[in-house]
Length: 471
Image: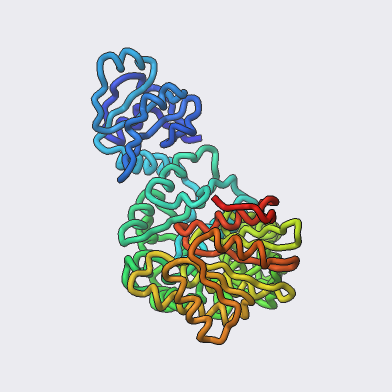
Protein backbone atom coordinates (compact mmCIF):
# COMPACT_ATOMS: atom_id res chain seq x y z
CA UNK A 1 0.00 0.00 0.00
CA UNK A 2 1.27 3.47 -0.91
CA UNK A 3 1.18 5.42 2.35
CA UNK A 4 0.39 9.05 3.08
CA UNK A 5 1.35 11.04 6.17
CA UNK A 6 0.17 14.35 7.57
CA UNK A 7 3.40 15.96 6.40
CA UNK A 8 2.51 14.91 2.81
CA UNK A 9 -0.91 16.51 3.11
CA UNK A 10 0.56 19.73 4.46
CA UNK A 11 3.15 19.89 1.69
CA UNK A 12 0.77 19.24 -1.21
CA UNK A 13 -2.00 21.54 0.08
CA UNK A 14 0.26 24.28 1.45
CA UNK A 15 -1.76 23.89 4.62
CA UNK A 16 -1.02 24.89 8.20
CA UNK A 17 -0.83 22.33 10.99
CA UNK A 18 -2.74 23.70 13.98
CA UNK A 19 -2.35 20.67 16.28
CA UNK A 20 -1.03 17.11 16.07
CA UNK A 21 1.85 15.24 14.51
CA UNK A 22 3.22 15.48 10.99
CA UNK A 23 4.20 11.81 11.24
CA UNK A 24 0.63 10.59 11.63
CA UNK A 25 -0.25 8.08 8.90
CA UNK A 26 -3.49 8.85 7.09
CA UNK A 27 -5.29 5.94 5.42
CA UNK A 28 -9.03 6.55 5.19
CA UNK A 29 -10.82 9.75 4.26
CA UNK A 30 -14.39 10.88 4.87
CA UNK A 31 -16.58 13.93 4.22
CA UNK A 32 -19.60 12.72 6.20
CA UNK A 33 -19.60 12.74 10.01
CA UNK A 34 -22.43 10.21 9.96
CA UNK A 35 -20.02 7.66 8.47
CA UNK A 36 -16.84 8.54 10.37
CA UNK A 37 -14.78 5.57 11.54
CA UNK A 38 -11.91 5.39 14.00
CA UNK A 39 -8.75 7.15 12.76
CA UNK A 40 -10.39 8.56 9.62
CA UNK A 41 -9.25 11.86 8.14
CA UNK A 42 -12.23 14.18 7.81
CA UNK A 43 -12.31 16.79 5.03
CA UNK A 44 -14.84 19.58 5.52
CA UNK A 45 -16.34 20.21 2.10
CA UNK A 46 -18.22 23.46 1.56
CA UNK A 47 -21.08 23.33 -0.96
CA UNK A 48 -23.82 25.70 -2.07
CA UNK A 49 -26.20 24.74 0.73
CA UNK A 50 -23.97 22.94 3.20
CA UNK A 51 -20.68 23.63 4.99
CA UNK A 52 -18.93 20.51 6.22
CA UNK A 53 -16.32 22.66 7.98
CA UNK A 54 -18.83 23.32 10.73
CA UNK A 55 -18.72 19.68 11.81
CA UNK A 56 -14.98 19.25 12.39
CA UNK A 57 -15.38 18.88 16.16
CA UNK A 58 -18.11 16.28 15.70
CA UNK A 59 -15.74 14.34 13.40
CA UNK A 60 -13.01 14.35 16.05
CA UNK A 61 -15.43 13.30 18.79
CA UNK A 62 -16.59 10.37 16.63
CA UNK A 63 -13.06 9.03 16.20
CA UNK A 64 -11.38 10.95 13.38
CA UNK A 65 -7.67 11.39 14.05
CA UNK A 66 -7.24 14.25 11.59
CA UNK A 67 -9.43 16.99 10.14
CA UNK A 68 -8.83 19.34 7.23
CA UNK A 69 -10.79 22.59 7.38
CA UNK A 70 -10.85 25.98 5.66
CA UNK A 71 -11.15 29.54 6.95
CA UNK A 72 -11.97 28.61 10.54
CA UNK A 73 -10.60 30.22 13.66
CA UNK A 74 -9.47 27.55 16.10
CA UNK A 75 -9.50 28.91 19.66
CA UNK A 76 -6.72 28.26 22.17
CA UNK A 77 -9.21 26.28 24.23
CA UNK A 78 -10.01 24.07 21.22
CA UNK A 79 -6.31 23.56 20.53
CA UNK A 80 -5.79 22.34 24.10
CA UNK A 81 -8.91 20.15 23.96
CA UNK A 82 -7.79 18.39 20.75
CA UNK A 83 -4.02 18.46 21.22
CA UNK A 84 -3.91 14.69 20.72
CA UNK A 85 -5.61 15.06 17.32
CA UNK A 86 -4.37 16.65 14.09
CA UNK A 87 -6.00 19.77 12.68
CA UNK A 88 -4.90 21.14 9.30
CA UNK A 89 -6.15 24.47 8.00
CA UNK A 90 -6.15 25.18 4.25
CA UNK A 91 -7.44 28.00 2.05
CA UNK A 92 -9.92 25.79 0.20
CA UNK A 93 -10.83 22.23 1.24
CA UNK A 94 -12.18 21.29 -2.21
CA UNK A 95 -8.89 22.27 -3.86
CA UNK A 96 -7.07 20.43 -1.07
CA UNK A 97 -9.13 17.32 -1.84
CA UNK A 98 -8.09 17.50 -5.51
CA UNK A 99 -4.41 17.88 -4.63
CA UNK A 100 -4.41 15.02 -2.13
CA UNK A 101 -6.20 12.74 -4.62
CA UNK A 102 -3.65 13.64 -7.32
CA UNK A 103 -0.83 12.85 -4.90
CA UNK A 104 -2.38 9.48 -4.09
CA UNK A 105 -3.00 8.67 -7.77
CA UNK A 106 0.60 9.45 -8.70
CA UNK A 107 1.88 6.84 -6.28
CA UNK A 108 0.25 4.00 -8.29
CA UNK A 109 1.54 2.55 -11.54
CA UNK A 110 -1.58 0.55 -12.36
CA UNK A 111 -4.26 0.45 -15.07
CA UNK A 112 -6.56 3.41 -14.43
CA UNK A 113 -9.71 3.04 -16.51
CA UNK A 114 -12.00 6.06 -16.89
CA UNK A 115 -15.51 5.71 -18.33
CA UNK A 116 -17.76 8.46 -19.64
CA UNK A 117 -20.70 8.74 -22.03
CA UNK A 118 -24.22 10.10 -22.25
CA UNK A 119 -25.78 6.87 -21.00
CA UNK A 120 -24.52 3.52 -19.80
CA UNK A 121 -21.58 4.78 -17.73
CA UNK A 122 -22.53 3.04 -14.51
CA UNK A 123 -23.55 -0.29 -16.05
CA UNK A 124 -20.40 -0.31 -18.21
CA UNK A 125 -18.34 0.47 -15.12
CA UNK A 126 -19.95 -2.45 -13.29
CA UNK A 127 -19.28 -4.98 -16.03
CA UNK A 128 -15.77 -3.68 -16.81
CA UNK A 129 -14.76 -3.75 -13.14
CA UNK A 130 -16.06 -7.31 -12.74
CA UNK A 131 -14.07 -8.53 -15.73
CA UNK A 132 -10.90 -6.67 -14.74
CA UNK A 133 -11.19 -8.05 -11.20
CA UNK A 134 -10.81 -11.56 -12.59
CA UNK A 135 -7.10 -10.76 -12.93
CA UNK A 136 -6.45 -7.63 -10.86
CA UNK A 137 -7.50 -6.54 -7.38
CA UNK A 138 -9.80 -3.75 -8.54
CA UNK A 139 -11.24 -0.60 -6.98
CA UNK A 140 -14.24 0.96 -8.69
CA UNK A 141 -16.51 3.97 -8.30
CA UNK A 142 -19.31 3.04 -5.93
CA UNK A 143 -22.83 4.00 -6.91
CA UNK A 144 -22.98 7.23 -8.88
CA UNK A 145 -20.02 9.01 -7.22
CA UNK A 146 -18.77 10.29 -10.56
CA UNK A 147 -18.40 14.02 -9.92
CA UNK A 148 -15.68 16.35 -8.63
CA UNK A 149 -16.16 15.11 -5.07
CA UNK A 150 -16.99 11.44 -5.58
CA UNK A 151 -14.10 10.74 -7.95
CA UNK A 152 -11.26 12.04 -5.72
CA UNK A 153 -12.72 10.29 -2.68
CA UNK A 154 -12.76 7.06 -4.73
CA UNK A 155 -9.06 7.52 -5.56
CA UNK A 156 -8.30 8.07 -1.88
CA UNK A 157 -9.61 4.54 -1.19
CA UNK A 158 -6.68 3.02 -3.11
CA UNK A 159 -4.72 0.58 -0.98
CA UNK A 160 -3.25 -2.68 -2.32
CA UNK A 161 -5.29 -2.34 -5.51
CA UNK A 162 -3.89 -3.36 -8.87
CA UNK A 163 -6.45 -1.58 -11.06
CA UNK A 164 -8.84 1.35 -10.76
CA UNK A 165 -12.13 1.84 -12.65
CA UNK A 166 -13.66 5.31 -12.34
CA UNK A 167 -16.83 6.78 -13.79
CA UNK A 168 -16.84 10.40 -14.98
CA UNK A 169 -20.03 12.40 -15.25
CA UNK A 170 -20.59 15.97 -16.37
CA UNK A 171 -23.21 18.65 -17.01
CA UNK A 172 -21.04 21.38 -18.49
CA UNK A 173 -17.76 21.99 -20.30
CA UNK A 174 -14.64 21.70 -18.15
CA UNK A 175 -15.99 19.20 -15.64
CA UNK A 176 -14.44 16.09 -17.18
CA UNK A 177 -11.25 18.06 -17.79
CA UNK A 178 -10.98 18.51 -14.03
CA UNK A 179 -11.75 14.85 -13.30
CA UNK A 180 -9.23 13.51 -15.78
CA UNK A 181 -6.54 15.84 -14.41
CA UNK A 182 -7.04 14.15 -11.05
CA UNK A 183 -7.42 10.52 -12.18
CA UNK A 184 -4.87 10.61 -15.03
CA UNK A 185 -6.41 7.57 -16.77
CA UNK A 186 -4.27 5.49 -19.08
CA UNK A 187 -7.38 3.83 -20.54
CA UNK A 188 -10.36 5.99 -21.61
CA UNK A 189 -13.77 4.56 -22.53
CA UNK A 190 -16.57 6.56 -24.17
CA UNK A 191 -19.84 4.60 -24.29
CA UNK A 192 -21.89 6.94 -26.53
CA UNK A 193 -22.85 10.51 -27.30
CA UNK A 194 -26.54 11.19 -26.83
CA UNK A 195 -28.75 14.01 -25.61
CA UNK A 196 -28.21 13.99 -21.82
CA UNK A 197 -27.63 17.59 -20.63
CA UNK A 198 -28.18 18.92 -24.16
CA UNK A 199 -30.06 21.82 -22.57
CA UNK A 200 -26.78 22.89 -20.94
CA UNK A 201 -24.45 22.20 -23.86
CA UNK A 202 -26.60 23.12 -26.84
CA UNK A 203 -25.87 20.26 -29.27
CA UNK A 204 -24.70 16.66 -29.46
CA UNK A 205 -21.51 17.90 -31.12
CA UNK A 206 -20.80 20.01 -28.03
CA UNK A 207 -21.53 17.00 -25.83
CA UNK A 208 -18.93 15.05 -27.82
CA UNK A 209 -16.35 17.78 -27.22
CA UNK A 210 -17.13 17.80 -23.50
CA UNK A 211 -16.76 14.01 -23.30
CA UNK A 212 -13.47 14.13 -25.23
CA UNK A 213 -11.97 16.09 -22.35
CA UNK A 214 -11.36 12.64 -20.88
CA UNK A 215 -8.34 12.37 -23.20
CA UNK A 216 -6.57 15.29 -21.54
CA UNK A 217 -5.38 13.30 -18.51
CA UNK A 218 -2.42 11.50 -20.07
CA UNK A 219 -0.43 11.86 -23.27
CA UNK A 220 -1.16 8.57 -25.04
CA UNK A 221 -4.05 6.66 -23.46
CA UNK A 222 -5.73 3.63 -24.93
CA UNK A 223 -9.12 4.90 -26.16
CA UNK A 224 -12.06 2.50 -26.39
CA UNK A 225 -15.26 3.65 -28.10
CA UNK A 226 -18.68 2.39 -29.10
CA UNK A 227 -18.31 2.35 -32.88
CA UNK A 228 -22.08 2.09 -33.44
CA UNK A 229 -22.62 5.61 -32.10
CA UNK A 230 -22.76 7.97 -35.07
CA UNK A 231 -20.66 10.80 -33.63
CA UNK A 232 -18.05 8.48 -32.11
CA UNK A 233 -17.84 6.55 -35.38
CA UNK A 234 -17.17 9.78 -37.30
CA UNK A 235 -14.63 10.89 -34.70
CA UNK A 236 -12.86 7.52 -34.97
CA UNK A 237 -12.56 7.76 -38.75
CA UNK A 238 -11.07 11.24 -38.45
CA UNK A 239 -8.70 10.45 -35.57
CA UNK A 240 -7.67 6.79 -35.86
CA UNK A 241 -4.14 7.78 -36.92
CA UNK A 242 -3.78 10.27 -34.06
CA UNK A 243 -4.93 8.18 -31.11
CA UNK A 244 -4.56 4.56 -30.01
CA UNK A 245 -8.22 3.63 -30.52
CA UNK A 246 -9.97 0.27 -30.16
CA UNK A 247 -13.58 -0.13 -31.23
CA UNK A 248 -16.55 -2.34 -30.40
CA UNK A 249 -19.97 -2.56 -31.97
CA UNK A 250 -22.88 -4.56 -33.32
CA UNK A 251 -23.70 -2.75 -36.57
CA UNK A 252 -20.40 -1.20 -37.70
CA UNK A 253 -17.33 -3.32 -38.38
CA UNK A 254 -15.14 -2.97 -35.30
CA UNK A 255 -12.22 -4.58 -33.52
CA UNK A 256 -14.79 -6.55 -31.52
CA UNK A 257 -18.24 -7.35 -32.88
CA UNK A 258 -21.18 -9.35 -31.55
CA UNK A 259 -22.58 -12.07 -33.79
CA UNK A 260 -25.49 -14.53 -33.52
CA UNK A 261 -27.22 -12.37 -30.93
CA UNK A 262 -30.04 -13.94 -28.91
CA UNK A 263 -32.07 -11.41 -26.95
CA UNK A 264 -34.25 -12.62 -24.08
CA UNK A 265 -36.06 -10.70 -21.38
CA UNK A 266 -33.80 -11.82 -18.54
CA UNK A 267 -30.52 -12.45 -20.37
CA UNK A 268 -28.77 -12.38 -23.73
CA UNK A 269 -26.24 -14.43 -25.67
CA UNK A 270 -23.83 -13.62 -28.46
CA UNK A 271 -20.70 -14.87 -30.17
CA UNK A 272 -17.50 -12.83 -30.20
CA UNK A 273 -14.10 -13.52 -31.70
CA UNK A 274 -11.60 -13.31 -28.84
CA UNK A 275 -7.95 -14.00 -29.58
CA UNK A 276 -8.84 -15.82 -32.78
CA UNK A 277 -11.46 -18.08 -31.25
CA UNK A 278 -15.24 -17.67 -31.42
CA UNK A 279 -16.48 -17.54 -27.84
CA UNK A 280 -20.07 -17.76 -26.58
CA UNK A 281 -20.84 -15.01 -24.07
CA UNK A 282 -23.86 -14.96 -21.77
CA UNK A 283 -25.00 -11.62 -20.37
CA UNK A 284 -27.13 -11.98 -17.20
CA UNK A 285 -29.21 -8.91 -18.09
CA UNK A 286 -31.42 -8.48 -21.14
CA UNK A 287 -31.18 -5.68 -23.67
CA UNK A 288 -29.00 -4.93 -26.67
CA UNK A 289 -27.26 -2.11 -24.80
CA UNK A 290 -25.86 -4.64 -22.34
CA UNK A 291 -24.35 -6.55 -25.24
CA UNK A 292 -22.53 -3.33 -26.15
CA UNK A 293 -21.40 -2.95 -22.53
CA UNK A 294 -20.11 -6.53 -22.62
CA UNK A 295 -18.25 -5.91 -25.88
CA UNK A 296 -16.60 -2.93 -24.23
CA UNK A 297 -15.40 -5.17 -21.42
CA UNK A 298 -14.13 -7.74 -23.92
CA UNK A 299 -12.19 -5.04 -25.78
CA UNK A 300 -10.56 -3.73 -22.62
CA UNK A 301 -9.85 -7.15 -21.12
CA UNK A 302 -8.16 -8.34 -24.31
CA UNK A 303 -5.85 -5.31 -24.18
CA UNK A 304 -5.05 -6.16 -20.55
CA UNK A 305 -4.28 -9.76 -21.60
CA UNK A 306 -6.99 -11.28 -19.41
CA UNK A 307 -7.74 -14.92 -20.27
CA UNK A 308 -10.83 -15.58 -22.38
CA UNK A 309 -12.39 -17.84 -19.75
CA UNK A 310 -12.02 -15.07 -17.15
CA UNK A 311 -13.59 -12.53 -19.52
CA UNK A 312 -16.58 -14.82 -20.10
CA UNK A 313 -16.93 -15.60 -16.38
CA UNK A 314 -16.68 -11.93 -15.38
CA UNK A 315 -19.45 -10.91 -17.77
CA UNK A 316 -21.67 -13.78 -16.70
CA UNK A 317 -21.33 -12.90 -12.99
CA UNK A 318 -21.43 -9.11 -12.97
CA UNK A 319 -24.09 -7.30 -10.94
CA UNK A 320 -25.63 -3.92 -11.66
CA UNK A 321 -25.53 -0.94 -9.32
CA UNK A 322 -28.93 -0.56 -7.64
CA UNK A 323 -31.68 1.36 -9.47
CA UNK A 324 -30.15 0.41 -12.84
CA UNK A 325 -32.35 -2.20 -14.49
CA UNK A 326 -33.22 -3.60 -11.09
CA UNK A 327 -35.64 -6.42 -11.92
CA UNK A 328 -37.76 -8.15 -9.29
CA UNK A 329 -40.36 -10.88 -9.52
CA UNK A 330 -43.16 -10.30 -7.01
CA UNK A 331 -45.00 -13.10 -5.24
CA UNK A 332 -48.19 -12.36 -7.16
CA UNK A 333 -46.46 -13.10 -10.47
CA UNK A 334 -45.90 -9.46 -11.48
CA UNK A 335 -42.44 -8.40 -12.63
CA UNK A 336 -41.07 -4.93 -11.81
CA UNK A 337 -38.24 -3.14 -13.63
CA UNK A 338 -36.83 -0.24 -11.62
CA UNK A 339 -34.68 1.81 -14.03
CA UNK A 340 -35.57 5.15 -12.51
CA UNK A 341 -32.18 6.58 -11.58
CA UNK A 342 -31.81 8.73 -14.68
CA UNK A 343 -33.31 9.25 -18.10
CA UNK A 344 -32.44 10.64 -21.49
CA UNK A 345 -33.95 9.91 -24.88
CA UNK A 346 -31.29 7.27 -25.61
CA UNK A 347 -31.78 5.61 -22.23
CA UNK A 348 -35.57 5.58 -22.69
CA UNK A 349 -35.15 4.18 -26.20
CA UNK A 350 -32.90 1.34 -25.01
CA UNK A 351 -35.09 0.45 -22.04
CA UNK A 352 -38.32 0.43 -24.06
CA UNK A 353 -36.69 -1.81 -26.63
CA UNK A 354 -35.63 -4.10 -23.79
CA UNK A 355 -39.18 -4.13 -22.39
CA UNK A 356 -40.49 -5.18 -25.82
CA UNK A 357 -38.37 -8.34 -25.62
CA UNK A 358 -40.77 -9.82 -23.05
CA UNK A 359 -43.03 -11.45 -25.62
CA UNK A 360 -45.40 -13.29 -23.29
CA UNK A 361 -46.19 -10.49 -20.85
CA UNK A 362 -48.49 -7.50 -20.82
CA UNK A 363 -46.02 -4.59 -20.88
CA UNK A 364 -46.73 -1.43 -18.86
CA UNK A 365 -44.40 1.59 -19.05
CA UNK A 366 -44.62 4.19 -16.27
CA UNK A 367 -42.66 7.16 -17.63
CA UNK A 368 -41.88 10.60 -16.26
CA UNK A 369 -40.04 13.73 -17.27
CA UNK A 370 -36.47 13.84 -18.57
CA UNK A 371 -34.54 16.83 -17.19
CA UNK A 372 -31.88 19.24 -18.50
CA UNK A 373 -33.09 19.16 -22.10
CA UNK A 374 -33.78 22.88 -22.46
CA UNK A 375 -35.28 23.90 -25.81
CA UNK A 376 -35.06 20.28 -27.00
CA UNK A 377 -37.38 19.00 -24.27
CA UNK A 378 -40.68 18.80 -26.18
CA UNK A 379 -39.12 17.20 -29.24
CA UNK A 380 -37.25 14.54 -27.26
CA UNK A 381 -40.27 13.69 -25.12
CA UNK A 382 -42.32 13.28 -28.30
CA UNK A 383 -39.64 10.94 -29.66
CA UNK A 384 -40.03 8.82 -26.53
CA UNK A 385 -43.74 8.58 -27.30
CA UNK A 386 -42.87 7.27 -30.77
CA UNK A 387 -40.62 4.64 -29.18
CA UNK A 388 -43.40 3.53 -26.84
CA UNK A 389 -45.73 2.94 -29.79
CA UNK A 390 -43.03 1.45 -32.01
CA UNK A 391 -42.12 -1.14 -29.35
CA UNK A 392 -45.78 -2.13 -28.94
CA UNK A 393 -45.99 -1.35 -25.24
CA UNK A 394 -49.47 -2.33 -24.05
CA UNK A 395 -50.10 0.42 -21.50
CA UNK A 396 -48.48 3.84 -21.11
CA UNK A 397 -48.71 5.74 -17.82
CA UNK A 398 -47.24 9.25 -17.60
CA UNK A 399 -46.64 11.81 -14.89
CA UNK A 400 -44.88 15.17 -15.17
CA UNK A 401 -45.12 18.43 -17.06
CA UNK A 402 -43.23 17.27 -20.16
CA UNK A 403 -44.43 13.67 -20.11
CA UNK A 404 -47.66 14.92 -21.66
CA UNK A 405 -45.73 15.08 -24.95
CA UNK A 406 -44.87 11.39 -24.59
CA UNK A 407 -48.57 10.62 -24.24
CA UNK A 408 -49.61 12.92 -27.10
CA UNK A 409 -47.17 11.39 -29.56
CA UNK A 410 -48.04 7.82 -28.60
CA UNK A 411 -51.72 8.67 -29.09
CA UNK A 412 -50.94 10.23 -32.48
CA UNK A 413 -49.43 6.87 -33.46
CA UNK A 414 -52.78 5.23 -32.61
CA UNK A 415 -51.68 3.67 -29.35
CA UNK A 416 -54.50 2.88 -26.94
CA UNK A 417 -54.41 2.53 -23.14
CA UNK A 418 -52.65 5.83 -22.39
CA UNK A 419 -53.06 7.44 -18.97
CA UNK A 420 -51.79 10.79 -17.62
CA UNK A 421 -51.72 11.21 -13.83
CA UNK A 422 -50.97 14.18 -11.58
CA UNK A 423 -49.16 12.44 -8.73
CA UNK A 424 -47.70 9.16 -7.50
CA UNK A 425 -50.75 8.27 -5.44
CA UNK A 426 -52.92 8.23 -8.58
CA UNK A 427 -50.39 5.99 -10.36
CA UNK A 428 -50.24 3.57 -7.45
CA UNK A 429 -54.04 3.42 -7.15
CA UNK A 430 -54.30 2.62 -10.85
CA UNK A 431 -51.62 -0.07 -10.72
CA UNK A 432 -53.10 -1.74 -7.66
CA UNK A 433 -56.49 -1.99 -9.37
CA UNK A 434 -55.26 -3.03 -12.82
CA UNK A 435 -52.07 -5.09 -12.55
CA UNK A 436 -52.45 -8.83 -12.79
CA UNK A 437 -50.32 -11.96 -12.82
CA UNK A 438 -47.87 -12.07 -15.72
CA UNK A 439 -47.66 -8.30 -16.15
CA UNK A 440 -44.31 -6.55 -16.37
CA UNK A 441 -44.13 -2.90 -15.32
CA UNK A 442 -41.27 -0.48 -16.03
CA UNK A 443 -40.55 2.68 -14.01
CA UNK A 444 -38.32 5.22 -15.75
CA UNK A 445 -37.76 8.98 -15.42
CA UNK A 446 -35.04 11.38 -14.37
CA UNK A 447 -33.93 10.87 -10.79
CA UNK A 448 -35.63 14.06 -9.61
CA UNK A 449 -39.02 12.53 -10.39
CA UNK A 450 -38.29 9.89 -7.71
CA UNK A 451 -40.00 7.10 -9.61
CA UNK A 452 -37.84 4.62 -7.71
CA UNK A 453 -40.27 5.30 -4.85
CA UNK A 454 -43.06 3.85 -6.99
CA UNK A 455 -41.03 0.72 -7.54
CA UNK A 456 -40.38 0.35 -3.82
CA UNK A 457 -44.05 0.82 -2.96
CA UNK A 458 -45.31 -1.75 -5.42
CA UNK A 459 -42.85 -4.30 -4.05
CA UNK A 460 -44.38 -4.09 -0.56
CA UNK A 461 -46.88 -6.80 0.31
CA UNK A 462 -49.14 -4.27 2.05
CA UNK A 463 -49.37 -2.29 -1.20
CA UNK A 464 -51.94 -4.74 -2.49
CA UNK A 465 -54.26 -4.01 0.45
CA UNK A 466 -57.20 -1.86 -0.72
CA UNK A 467 -56.80 0.53 2.23
CA UNK A 468 -53.11 1.18 1.52
CA UNK A 469 -52.10 4.83 1.01
CA UNK A 470 -48.81 6.24 -0.26
CA UNK A 471 -47.20 8.92 1.92
